Image 1: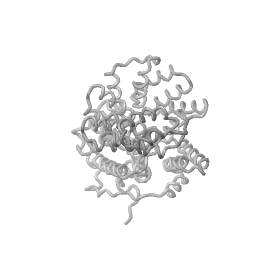
Image 2: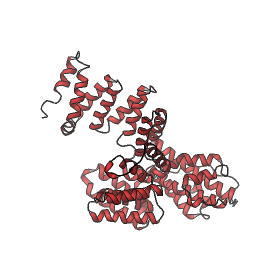
Image 3: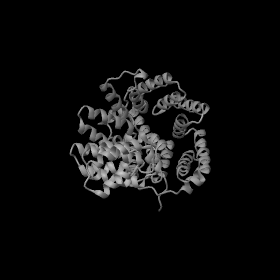
Image 4: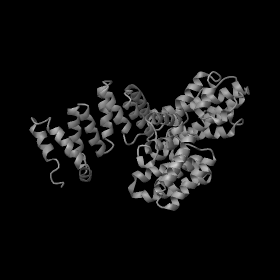
Length: 450
C-alpha cells in the first residue's frame, strides 16, 4: 500500500486537523523546499509545546519565548523529544528569513535534517495525544515512513486548487527561475508576484513575512515601502516578532528617517526580534547613531540574537567579539555551528573559520579549503581570500589562487579591485623573484587595463 501524505500522523487527523494539515504541507516540501518544511515544523513544535504546558498546568508559559517553554518541559517530556526539538529549533526559527534572502539549494544534509524533524514531530504528537491526553486509539506508535517526493507539477496543481501554502512554494520556484532564466525573467517575476499575492491574500503568515521583507528592503518607491511597513504592523499584531521590527527599521532608514528606524530597532530589541538585535549592535559602531553599547553589552545582545533564531550575520559578528577577547575556541565552535546551519552566500563565516583554524593550528588543510570555498563566491572574495592566506603564511596557496582567479576574472572586476590587486601583487612578487614565468605574469597582469 503506497504512502499518503499525512499517514505518519493520521492519529491526529480528527483530534487536531490544523496540525494534521501543517504536517502534510511540511511533508510535501521536504525534498524540494526543506526550508519550508522547517518553517512548518516550527509551528507544529510550538503548538505541541503550548498544549503540553497547558495540560501540565505550567503557569505563565504564554509570556515566555519558545526556548524557555522547552526548558520548562525538561523532565516532564521524554528527553529524546526535548533534545530533538531543541537541536532543530534554531534552524526552524531561521527558516523564514533564509527562505526569503538566500538561494539555498536542497542538499542531502538539509533534507535529512528535515526528515529527522518530521520524525520528531510525529513522536511528539504521539506522546502528547496518547501518553499525556491518554486518548489511546492505538496501542503502539506506527513506524515512521519517509514521505514520497513531489513534483513541481503537483505543487502547481495544489496551488490552482486553492492550497495557499502550495502557492507559496510555487512562488518560490518562480522567484528562483527569475534569477537564473534570463530569457523569461519577466514571465517568472509576474508569476512569482501573482502566487505570492494569492498566498498573502489567504493570510499565510510566511508569505506575509516574505513580502514585507521584499517591500521594505527592495521596494522601488515610497508607496511600496509603506506597503511593506503596513504588513510589518499586521504581523506584529499577530504576535510575529522575528524580523518584523527589523524590516520596519530598514524601511524607515530607506526613507531617510534614521531616528525613527533606531527607535524601532530598540523596540525590536525589547520584543526579542533577533534581526533587529543584530542590526542594533551593528549600528552602535557608528557614533552618529548615538547608540552607546559596551563590548559586553554587544556580546550579550548578539548571544541573545543567535539563541532566538540562529542567523549567520549575528554569529559572524559575535565570533569577532569572541576573538577580540581571546576566546578563540568559543569563536571556532560558534563558526562551526554557523557554517552547518546558515546559508552564508557571501562566505564570511567560512572565511573567518578558515583563518581561525589555521591561526590556532586546529586543522590547516581544512582551514585552507574554507578560504578557497569562500574565494569561489566572487572575484572580490577571491582577492580577500588571497589576503587572508598571506596573513597566515600560506604563500603557495595564495599565489595559485591569485593567478587562477585573475585569469578567469572579468575586466570590470579587475578594474574595480585594482588597488587591492596592486597591493597583493607587490606582496607576491617579493616572494617569487626566482620564478621568472610567475614573476612576468605578476608584473604584467594589469597591462592594458588603465
